[in-house]
Amino acid sequence: MGVASTVCFTFPFTSTTVTRSVLRRRQLHSLLAPSSFHICSSSKWGSNPQRSLVKINARRVSCSLLEVEDDLNDDESCELVSGAEVSIGEGDDSISAYLFKAVKNNNGTGILLLSDIYGFEDSSTRDFAYRVACNGFNVLVPDLFRRDPWTRDRPTTIFEEWMAKQQPRRVAKDIDTSVEWIADEFMAAGISKKLGIIGFCFGGGRVIEVLSRDQGARFGVGVSFYGTKMDPLIASNVKVPVLLISGDSDPLCEVRVLHEIEKSIGNGSRVVIFKGRGHGFAHRPVSPEEDTDAEQAFSIMRSWLHDDLDSKN
Image (cartoon, rainbow, N blue to C red; front, side, top):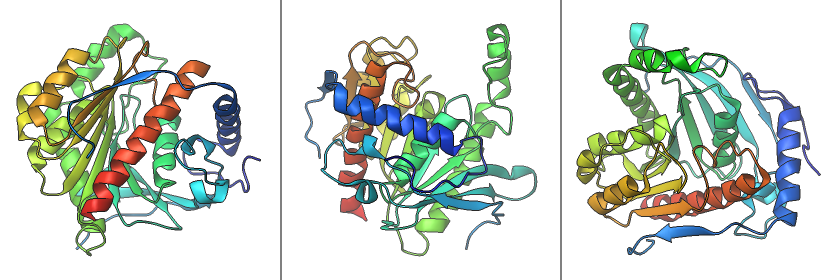
């Protein structure tokens, strides 16, 4: 079991890495019981801009980590996914992005995924986007940092200097450009009535900003993983349900703030807190225990997307 065919993508995410990751998660899934987590809520679940396709490749992988709710075999749980780097916008406003599309059983729904500070080329982010696409979605991951993401080899003493260069207005404009592109790609043709949005860390904080500007016009649902620098004051402008996932040991995403945002948004929004988990556990787990909770978080998010977007599309 493992990789049925090996075709490398254009980003630094090799088939060897996929094989090891999937086998590791498969072993953990069979050996470890799920960790406990809290679902904190009283509510009920309730023409295209110019682009250039750089390269398209496809492969089939075993996504056993998706098999949390359903007894599906490998072929059913993870269909063929294509990946292509795209250029969005024109001239100086042009930005790069990566588009993952489910080749088989594509539900036609577009998902905008906003990365953490490590950018759209980071293997953990693209791995997660690939897994979302495995469930029939079309996932666009834009470059929020204009080819200058934070890297682990930089000294932490210059982090604030680097962050200051990521001007909020420029980031918001690039995100809006991405929203226009994905809306034209999947909504203008009548393929999808509503879009979804997911964000991690830096991108998770931007989810609330994007939805507050959109006010339900294009997006039907949102998911924020341990969002940073979120403003509860603008949450009241959000008109769609948002799933807020974090850990109770995350110093960058206070549980109190998440509950304030949940209360302000309403509309069936929900906070999910994992005990003992810190920042980044859902998309870059660093221990067997975090890996198990990452599977749980993915399963919750998957159900959230399907329940809300399927009913609207």
